[in-house]
Length: 298
Image (cartoon, rainbow, N blue to C red; front, side):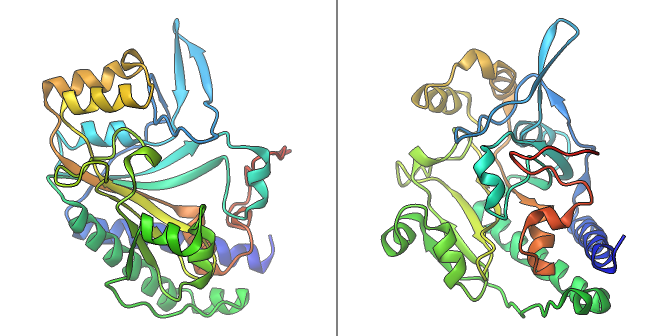
């Protein structure tokens, strides 16, 4: 193992430990991750499902723990998990520098929380972990030639429509290249996100969700928002998006029994480490990277 690889692993370990410490202080309970499930996040962009057959049924490899998070906050008010995700994305995405088809996401959810509350939480988490890496990984950052910039919340905000008008379609990369600090993108149109993202009751067609975008061209950091939890709303959104309610019967059954309102987000660990370490490609964060379109020998 090279000194460079060892430095990246040390930074990754610090990110995991600092995030756990921060969330424990904030009253979060850690869940073991869900690897297989009868239903998983639809993610309607170009992402194929990985499915296995066992015990007379089909099981999806988890693409995100969104439905399990919504269910889990019935038991614990605040939960998080370091969740492995499998997303079989197009081979050409392997060249973006941002994509792995197997990665780990810090997924968290809070019962009764609003978008504003989880945005504030995300800023505090991001700042805390960044400062811990800066303080504890000085030698490793020097080895990588990385000087971490200083960030002070609150981070600036821009609506989806404003970003689209300023930078055009697919604005994330241009916004990230221009930004000098992390930036929130808020108020996504209902047609561009998933059915579980909550529509603002005061502004039809606008979702109470958000993305945090890294500066320096590193792209998306985290994504989340408030959740649809009423069975009638979930059913209507499924039908609008052309999804079969039968495929999401486990979620609908939970909603009929009573899902609490909640909000949360997911932040990719490898992308986070890539940013903190200043790496050209997210593959550099893993000893055994799984890059779209590439085969691995181990």
